[in-house]
Length: 163
Ligand SMILES: CC(C)(COP(=O)(O)OP(=O)(O)OC[C@H]1O[C@@H](n2cnc3c(N)ncnc32)[C@H](O)[C@@H]1OP(=O)(O)O)[C@@H](O)C(=O)NCCC(=O)NCCS
Image (cartoon, rainbow, N blue to C red):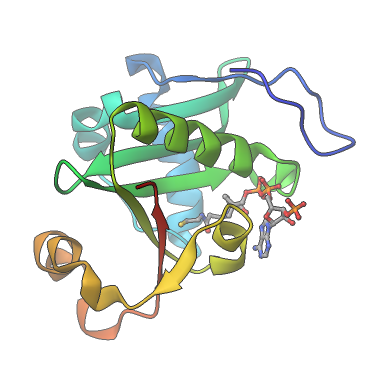
Protein backbone atom coordinates (compact mmCIF):
# COMPACT_ATOMS: atom_id res chain seq x y z
CA UNK A 1 0.00 0.00 0.00
CA UNK A 2 1.60 3.29 -1.10
CA UNK A 3 0.06 6.56 0.04
CA UNK A 4 1.01 10.17 -0.33
CA UNK A 5 2.41 11.66 2.84
CA UNK A 6 2.40 15.05 4.45
CA UNK A 7 4.51 17.56 2.56
CA UNK A 8 8.26 17.27 2.99
CA UNK A 9 8.24 13.49 3.52
CA UNK A 10 9.28 10.88 0.97
CA UNK A 11 6.09 9.57 -0.62
CA UNK A 12 7.35 6.07 -1.36
CA UNK A 13 6.93 4.43 2.04
CA UNK A 14 4.98 1.18 2.01
CA UNK A 15 3.01 -0.51 4.79
CA UNK A 16 3.83 -4.20 4.84
CA UNK A 17 3.50 -7.30 6.99
CA UNK A 18 6.21 -7.72 9.61
CA UNK A 19 8.56 -10.69 9.28
CA UNK A 20 10.73 -12.52 11.78
CA UNK A 21 13.63 -10.30 10.72
CA UNK A 22 11.73 -7.27 12.08
CA UNK A 23 11.24 -8.56 15.64
CA UNK A 24 14.34 -7.00 17.19
CA UNK A 25 13.87 -3.67 15.45
CA UNK A 26 10.21 -3.54 16.53
CA UNK A 27 11.29 -4.26 20.09
CA UNK A 28 14.03 -1.60 19.88
CA UNK A 29 11.56 1.11 18.84
CA UNK A 30 9.03 -0.13 21.41
CA UNK A 31 11.63 -0.04 24.19
CA UNK A 32 12.44 3.55 23.24
CA UNK A 33 8.82 4.67 23.77
CA UNK A 34 8.26 2.34 26.72
CA UNK A 35 11.23 3.94 28.50
CA UNK A 36 9.45 7.29 28.18
CA UNK A 37 6.13 5.84 29.42
CA UNK A 38 4.39 6.44 26.07
CA UNK A 39 3.82 2.75 25.32
CA UNK A 40 3.70 -0.44 27.32
CA UNK A 41 6.79 -2.62 27.01
CA UNK A 42 6.39 -6.04 25.36
CA UNK A 43 8.65 -9.01 25.59
CA UNK A 44 10.33 -10.44 22.54
CA UNK A 45 8.20 -13.58 22.82
CA UNK A 46 5.00 -11.48 23.01
CA UNK A 47 6.03 -9.69 19.79
CA UNK A 48 6.86 -13.00 18.11
CA UNK A 49 3.54 -14.53 19.20
CA UNK A 50 1.69 -11.55 17.73
CA UNK A 51 3.94 -11.00 14.70
CA UNK A 52 1.16 -11.87 12.26
CA UNK A 53 -0.79 -8.86 13.54
CA UNK A 54 2.04 -6.35 13.02
CA UNK A 55 2.24 -3.96 10.06
CA UNK A 56 5.45 -2.01 9.50
CA UNK A 57 6.98 0.75 7.40
CA UNK A 58 10.69 0.22 6.78
CA UNK A 59 13.63 2.28 5.66
CA UNK A 60 16.23 -0.26 4.68
CA UNK A 61 16.21 -2.75 7.54
CA UNK A 62 15.04 -0.18 10.07
CA UNK A 63 11.45 -0.04 11.30
CA UNK A 64 10.38 3.59 11.09
CA UNK A 65 6.72 2.99 11.91
CA UNK A 66 4.58 0.09 13.04
CA UNK A 67 1.36 -0.95 14.70
CA UNK A 68 -0.65 -4.08 15.28
CA UNK A 69 -4.33 -5.00 15.20
CA UNK A 70 -5.12 -7.59 17.86
CA UNK A 71 -8.52 -9.12 18.59
CA UNK A 72 -10.41 -9.46 21.87
CA UNK A 73 -13.48 -10.91 20.25
CA UNK A 74 -14.49 -11.48 16.65
CA UNK A 75 -16.05 -8.00 16.59
CA UNK A 76 -13.62 -5.97 18.74
CA UNK A 77 -9.96 -5.34 17.86
CA UNK A 78 -7.34 -3.07 19.39
CA UNK A 79 -4.62 -0.92 17.84
CA UNK A 80 -1.49 -1.80 19.80
CA UNK A 81 2.17 -0.84 19.71
CA UNK A 82 1.53 2.05 17.32
CA UNK A 83 4.72 4.08 16.93
CA UNK A 84 6.72 6.20 14.52
CA UNK A 85 10.46 6.86 14.80
CA UNK A 86 11.06 10.15 16.65
CA UNK A 87 12.85 11.85 13.77
CA UNK A 88 9.96 11.30 11.37
CA UNK A 89 6.90 12.03 13.53
CA UNK A 90 4.16 14.24 12.11
CA UNK A 91 5.02 13.15 8.58
CA UNK A 92 1.91 11.04 8.02
CA UNK A 93 3.35 7.60 8.83
CA UNK A 94 1.18 7.09 11.92
CA UNK A 95 -1.88 7.83 9.81
CA UNK A 96 -0.65 5.38 7.13
CA UNK A 97 -0.31 2.59 9.68
CA UNK A 98 -3.73 3.19 11.30
CA UNK A 99 -5.47 3.51 7.91
CA UNK A 100 -3.89 0.20 6.92
CA UNK A 101 -5.12 -1.42 10.17
CA UNK A 102 -8.62 -0.03 9.53
CA UNK A 103 -8.52 -1.51 6.01
CA UNK A 104 -7.59 -4.90 7.49
CA UNK A 105 -10.33 -4.62 10.13
CA UNK A 106 -12.93 -3.86 7.48
CA UNK A 107 -11.79 -6.83 5.39
CA UNK A 108 -12.24 -9.03 8.47
CA UNK A 109 -15.66 -7.45 9.10
CA UNK A 110 -14.60 -6.28 12.55
CA UNK A 111 -17.26 -4.05 14.09
CA UNK A 112 -15.15 -1.89 16.43
CA UNK A 113 -11.52 -0.83 16.77
CA UNK A 114 -10.32 0.63 20.06
CA UNK A 115 -7.08 1.92 21.53
CA UNK A 116 -5.83 3.12 24.89
CA UNK A 117 -3.68 6.16 24.28
CA UNK A 118 -2.02 9.35 25.50
CA UNK A 119 -2.57 10.95 22.08
CA UNK A 120 -6.37 10.97 21.63
CA UNK A 121 -6.16 13.96 19.28
CA UNK A 122 -4.15 11.89 16.80
CA UNK A 123 -6.92 9.27 16.82
CA UNK A 124 -9.64 11.94 16.58
CA UNK A 125 -8.05 12.98 13.28
CA UNK A 126 -8.77 9.43 12.11
CA UNK A 127 -12.43 9.61 13.22
CA UNK A 128 -12.04 7.75 16.50
CA UNK A 129 -14.07 9.14 19.40
CA UNK A 130 -13.14 9.25 23.07
CA UNK A 131 -15.14 6.79 25.18
CA UNK A 132 -15.24 5.46 28.73
CA UNK A 133 -12.79 2.58 29.26
CA UNK A 134 -15.45 0.66 31.13
CA UNK A 135 -17.15 -0.29 27.87
CA UNK A 136 -14.22 -2.64 27.18
CA UNK A 137 -14.38 -5.27 29.94
CA UNK A 138 -12.56 -7.63 27.51
CA UNK A 139 -9.54 -5.32 27.61
CA UNK A 140 -9.69 -4.37 31.28
CA UNK A 141 -10.12 -7.86 32.70
CA UNK A 142 -8.21 -9.69 29.98
CA UNK A 143 -5.09 -7.54 29.55
CA UNK A 144 -5.10 -4.41 31.73
CA UNK A 145 -5.48 -6.46 34.88
CA UNK A 146 -1.92 -7.74 34.31
CA UNK A 147 -0.48 -4.27 33.64
CA UNK A 148 1.63 -2.38 36.17
CA UNK A 149 -0.62 0.66 35.56
CA UNK A 150 -3.84 -1.23 36.37
CA UNK A 151 -4.74 0.69 39.53
CA UNK A 152 -3.47 3.98 38.19
CA UNK A 153 -4.19 4.00 34.47
CA UNK A 154 -4.34 7.46 32.90
CA UNK A 155 -4.64 6.34 29.28
CA UNK A 156 -7.66 7.50 27.30
CA UNK A 157 -9.90 5.04 25.46
CA UNK A 158 -10.76 5.81 21.84
CA UNK A 159 -13.12 3.92 19.57
CA UNK A 160 -13.86 3.69 15.86
CA UNK A 161 -17.14 2.00 14.92
CA UNK A 162 -17.01 0.32 11.53
CA UNK A 163 -20.60 -0.97 11.52
C1 LIG B 1 1.18 8.97 17.89
C2 LIG B 1 2.05 8.74 16.64
C3 LIG B 1 1.95 7.29 16.25
C4 LIG B 1 1.51 9.62 15.50
O1 LIG B 1 2.21 9.34 14.32
P1 LIG B 1 2.68 10.53 13.35
O2 LIG B 1 3.26 9.94 12.13
O3 LIG B 1 3.51 11.45 14.14
O4 LIG B 1 1.28 11.25 13.03
P2 LIG B 1 0.74 11.73 11.60
O5 LIG B 1 1.73 12.63 10.99
O6 LIG B 1 0.29 10.57 10.81
O7 LIG B 1 -0.52 12.59 12.08
C5 LIG B 1 -1.84 12.44 11.57
C6 LIG B 1 -2.65 13.62 12.11
O8 LIG B 1 -2.65 13.58 13.56
C7 LIG B 1 -2.07 14.77 14.09
N1 LIG B 1 -1.22 14.40 15.25
C8 LIG B 1 -0.15 13.59 15.23
N2 LIG B 1 0.34 13.47 16.49
C9 LIG B 1 -0.44 14.24 17.26
C10 LIG B 1 -0.42 14.54 18.64
N3 LIG B 1 0.50 14.04 19.48
N4 LIG B 1 -1.37 15.39 19.13
C11 LIG B 1 -2.33 15.91 18.31
N5 LIG B 1 -2.39 15.65 16.97
C12 LIG B 1 -1.45 14.82 16.47
C13 LIG B 1 -1.21 15.34 12.95
O9 LIG B 1 -1.04 16.73 13.09
C14 LIG B 1 -2.03 14.96 11.74
O10 LIG B 1 -3.10 15.88 11.59
P3 LIG B 1 -3.56 16.38 10.11
O11 LIG B 1 -4.11 15.15 9.41
O12 LIG B 1 -4.59 17.41 10.39
O13 LIG B 1 -2.33 16.90 9.46
C15 LIG B 1 3.53 9.13 16.90
O14 LIG B 1 3.59 10.47 17.34
C16 LIG B 1 4.23 8.26 17.94
O15 LIG B 1 4.87 7.28 17.59
N6 LIG B 1 4.15 8.62 19.25
C17 LIG B 1 4.83 7.91 20.31
C18 LIG B 1 4.18 6.57 20.61
C19 LIG B 1 2.72 6.71 20.90
O16 LIG B 1 2.29 7.50 21.71
N7 LIG B 1 1.91 5.88 20.19
C20 LIG B 1 0.46 5.87 20.33
C21 LIG B 1 0.06 4.72 21.15
S1 LIG B 1 -1.69 4.47 21.17
